[in-house]
Amino acid sequence: MNYDPLYIQFLYHFNMDRDYFECHEVMEELWMEENRSPLYQGLLQVAVGLYHARNNNTSGAIKLLSQAMSKLEVYPNHKLGIDMDRLLQESRQYVRELQMHNQEGPPYEFYDLNIVILDDLLATDVNAYKVDTHD
Image 1 (cartoon, rainbow, N blue to C red):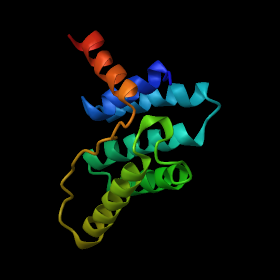
Image 2: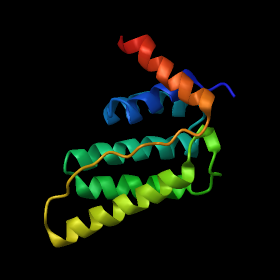
Image 3: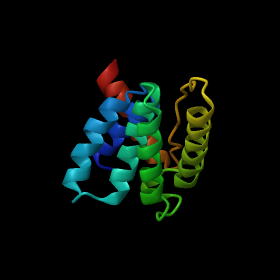
Image 4: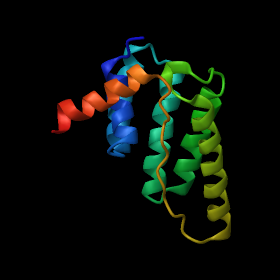
């Protein structure tokens, strides 16, 4: 399967340089091109949720990650060449941890999530993007 170059860029920024703001910029463009697809919106919301978590906006992170999960849970595991089930599982855990810290007080210690790429060709494209743009 051929993947949209914007999707490849999104995965690069998400998994490689952890630039969740740039993820938002790239995925928003793809989301608009794809008639505001809930699938792309859900992926965008995961990135924005992590952006909020990194910036200590716990309520914003919980809101965006929760919205993302409700959109993404209807898609099969290998949709778009990624492990959707794992992304959903880890996002649910993230929200639980954020809620616990939000209620009980200690500052939340941010950590990144990975989108596991199941399609070898997609993984090659993401790595090629890294080589092509960052050498």
